[in-house]
Every structure is written in C-alpha cells, then in structure tokens.
Length: 388
Image 1 (tube, helix red, strand yellow):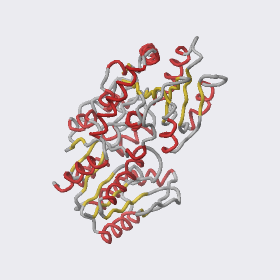
Image 2: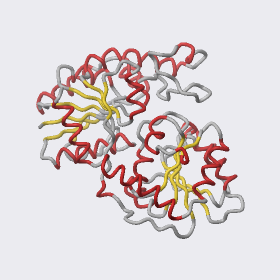
Image 3: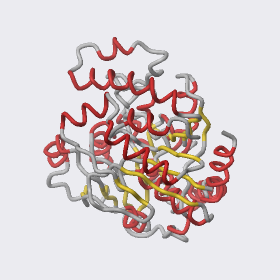
Image 4: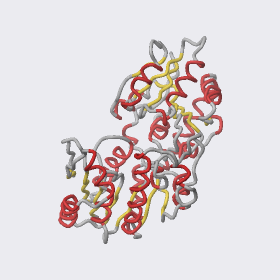
C-alpha cells in the first residue's frame, strides 16, 4: 500500500508527533509512505519532501484565500510521481485551498486535530468561555461583532476553505468522540479513531510515590490554555505545604511573555523549565505526581492526557471537549471557570493514599494499553482507507 501524508510542519506540536508516529507505523508494516511538509526550517526527515513557501504577511494572506499555482504545480508533480493509493491530510493551515485542489480525485481522508473545523476562531468558545455549537448551529456574526480585522479575516478564509474541503475529502477522522459528534452536527462525514501511543517510549514501569509531589503543566504557555488560572490556584494550594511544586514546560506565546514571567516571579514552588522535546518530557514523567490540563478552550484528544496515562501518572483536567472523555472520572475533572473547583481537585489528588492513586493510574493504563496501541490504530485506519 502506498500512502501519502501531508502536514504543515515536521516538528511543532501534537499533530506533528502523531504524523511521525503514523509514518513509522506504515513503514513497520512494509507500506510505502511519503510525507509532504511546508516547513519553515531546513530540517528534513526520512521519507519527507519539504516544499518551502513564503511566510511573509502578504503571502500568508494570499495562501489562505487562494490557490497558489506554483505550490499546486509542485504538489501535483510529487503526487503523480509517487502515485499514492491513499492520501492522509493532517494540519494544512499554510496553504489549504492549494492542497485541497491538488489532492482532488485521489482517495483522501483528513484527520481533524482541533475545533478549527467547526469554528473560525478555532476555540469554539464564546468570550465568557462557554462552549459554542459550531458554525452550522450558531450565529457567527454575533460572535464576531466588534472584533478586529484578524478575527473577521479568519471567518472569511474559513468559509472559502470549507468550499474546497468538502469537495476533496472522502472521509474525515477525529481522535475524540466529543469533536466527532460536534463535526457530525456541522455536516462532516466523520469517524472517530483515537490517537495511538508508542508504548516503546514508556519510561515508567512502576510508579514510585516518594519525596516531593510534583505537579506538571506542559504545552503552549498562553491564556487560552488556562495556565494563569492554574498558577493562581496553585499559589493558594501550596500554602503551608513545602512538599509540592508546580513545574511548567513549554514555549511562551511572545505577546504573553511579560505576563507569564510576572506570574511566577520569585516563586520558589513554581518552576519554569522552558521548551523540552517529547522524549525528555516522557522521561520527566518518572518524577511527576500529577499532570494538570487546565484548558479554557475545547481540546480534541490531547497528548498531555494520553502520555501521562501511558506512563502511570494521574491526570486532572478541565471538564470540556476530549479531556472529559479521556479522563472519564468526575473526581479528576474541574470547571475551569471556577478556580475554587481546580483548587479542590488539587487538594483531592494531594490527599490520595497510595492504593487509591495506584488504582486510578493502573485502570487508565489498562484502558489505553488495549485501545491506543499503534497496531490497533493501524488496523482501524487501514480498514477505513480500504473502505473508501
């Protein structure tokens, strides 16, 4: 079987991590696989062709709204030469219309990685952080009223992209049941296939709960991820506790750098470690007591829940989107709009005895050990491809 994968970047976030896992998966099953990217960097991995494009402001605007004939020509030439049986698209924010035009008439599926499929703002939440029903079931004009040019441009490009998307994609895939249902309610022909985890990367064979209790946040450092609500709650939580620390890992959104630095300034129990590669994060989970996923926006199927579960670490998270279905335990879910609820959950996991903690993590591990293996993902995906 010959499979062509298309994704904007080689390294960036969860979509890139899953794309590379999928490549390795196909190769291990003796399939031919090629990855096309539009990465800004010069790094190229095996079985990868990178088409460098212009990321200046005007080029980005043009590539969002129109088909770029030069990129389209290069894409079609590569696709024709490779001759794929199937094409699997992941994130294509760089030049979406161009890609959709180039893959038309091939058997093509696309994995939807976030709520940008049903919301031009990508967050699928209103200004008060309540959840939106998606563009087919809500009045986007009311939501975008009094917004700036950037937000209105996103809506314009969103509408144009959709016209081409639905003409070129045979089937959509989504890792979470929550977003799958949301997409179905917004006219997508879609199935749910949970993301895989590479269990060969597991670093924690047996959890040892000794010493300080380290709570970990990892991911982008920005307000929409709930990081400041977590920091505020943790400062209340660690009063009279010298055996807890909050460790933070990830890139800070440039516009929030000053705010973030001030929020943790001179705080001995909240430590920032900068950006870390995934392998290093997985290794760090050995020492972590609890991972916190406090997202304000509606997450799909975050690796920040899946990876700790695979490494036998307890996870608490906001009760929205894919997080809710993955954790599936009200004792470990909180209303992110209520900082006291997050504080209560921090206190709850802190007070767990060893037996209860180990039951939580072992139950979650057994669940994903059967549901999220690379072989299970491969079988589900290939069955879908062959059914097109």
